[in-house]
Length: 222
Image 1 (cartoon, helix red, strand yellow):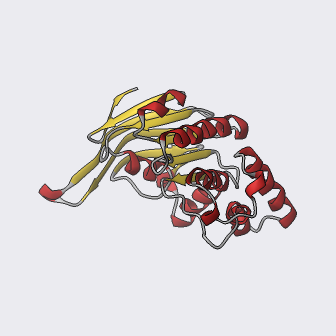
Image 2 (cartoon, rainbow, N blue to C red):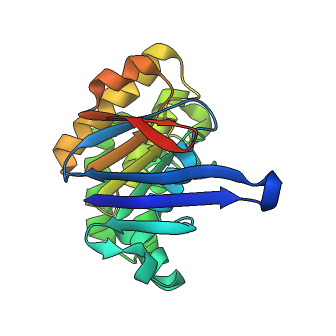
């Protein structure tokens, strides 16, 4: 599903340059949940942004679901992010004035999905994340854990092949964070997606099929 080869990414120039990634290479088979661990500044977010088509490398290549991202123009990258990759962030990013169901349905509206099909998909996803009874509540009426569940459901709306999650439990307490990570593992199985999850919480790593450790911009452990 994901092939990363000799990936380099730096910010700034000269002596002040920050080398976020230094020759990172790895592969993620279809259907696996792979965790990225590493201290703050180790390159986890940079790597996720490159794999998700949100940024471009200085050198190296990223292939997602058979697509070489270097061959895509901006419209192609937009299509990739819309149709093949779902994103879950530490900040839930929900629209405050919309209900949980409406937030989940946003990606489907952007694709102009048939309203009946959209409603059925939203209902299915809210049931999958355990929020069927909270469809009409707005983000301000939900707990942090519930908001992150809505965000996960929204990320799955367009049936992506790859789910990218950057510190999805960062704003949650330990118990809620574990429940969200268990949910991510469950949806990987239920939706047959591949997931790449960055986390600094070592208690969550045991739920991953595989763990990659980043340090100073390189992978130090498989």
